[in-house]
Amino acid sequence: MMAALNHSKELALHLRAAKNNGVTREEIKEMLLQTTIYCGVPAANSAFHLAQKIFDEDDRAALRLS
Image 1 (spheres, rainbow, N blue to C red):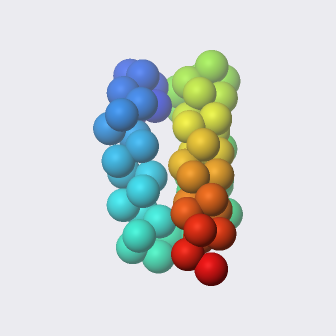
Image 2: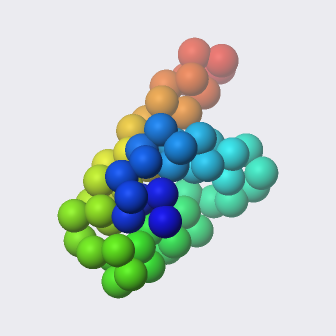
């Protein structure tokens, strides 16, 4: 719903919360794939780009901690 309505800040919050609660990247990607069917390609594409940005930020943070 947040992807369909272009609420990227709220979507980012929920993506981070999902990751912090043990949802895997693969599960997040699968959920976003379903977004394509129900919300359309442009909305899903934006959501995928946002998720990738969050994944990249997490990777950079993990590198700084190691």
